[in-house]
Image 1 (spheres, helix red, strand yellow):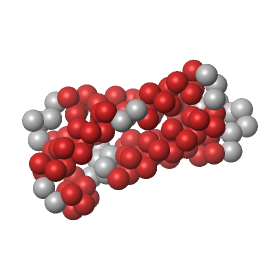
Image 2: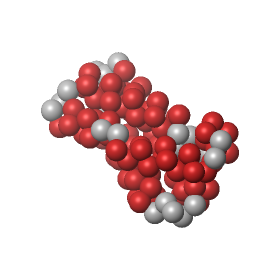
Image 3: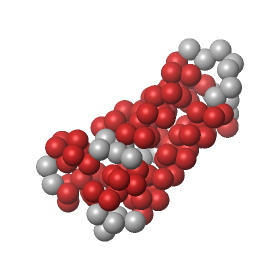
Length: 115
């Protein structure tokens, strides 16, 4: 899969990210580095521990990472969960969390298919 194909699969912005990094080789390097980032695991660990402040920090970080990498669909779903956790008062966040997980898993699967 090419970098352009990657961005089509994940519903991201190839042109935006390539404009930031300059070359497809550099884009592929940064995209692959995303897979090594511990933030998603930190989010899941915080959720499992019912630690909403830590979950908020993790999803806020994931939101920023996905924005910087022009991973639009993941960014948009991260925004929703970030806002739920920003002023959390016990509301159900399961649908928003599942959407983030789905988008994240799509990104990881696509990274595994990069040339």
